[in-house]
Length: 165
Ligand SMILES: [Zn+2]
Image (cartoon, rainbow, N blue to C red; front, side):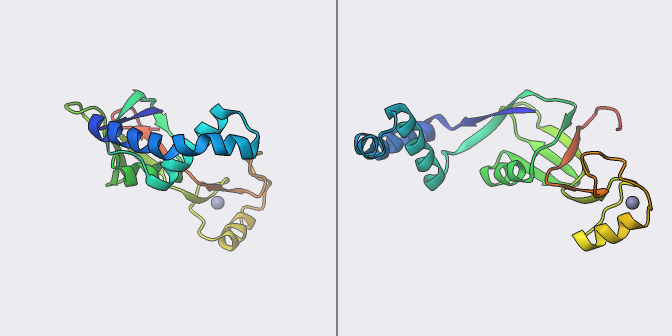
């Protein structure tokens, strides 16, 4: 799913002013020291400012393409919650979209963690995973996970309202 964050316009303008003030003064000196292109230096400094100061207030996100399935990484989910445009509750991820429109809601089919490739069971630790997989006494059915279990760092979701599976 493609998401575009929408910022509060006043907060965004104030944030950009602060960023310009922070970056403008050091671009020339950084270019001189690093020998890098000014555009590259500016982008890096702007990124550093965003990392250190956070983003302006996010009012909502636009779901540009609400696909039937969604596999957001744990990082995206954590960021969405921290930034306030994503909520996780009752086995669902709700994406706050434009004001006056309904949230885009995804049902979580499977959370992050370790899973057996043979039977789909949750297997806790790596040690438990190996012990469990050994009980199947067969090669991994998943060529991408030859150990017989996978460690998913993402949520497996389907769009609420779409048919099961
Ligand atoms: Zn199994």
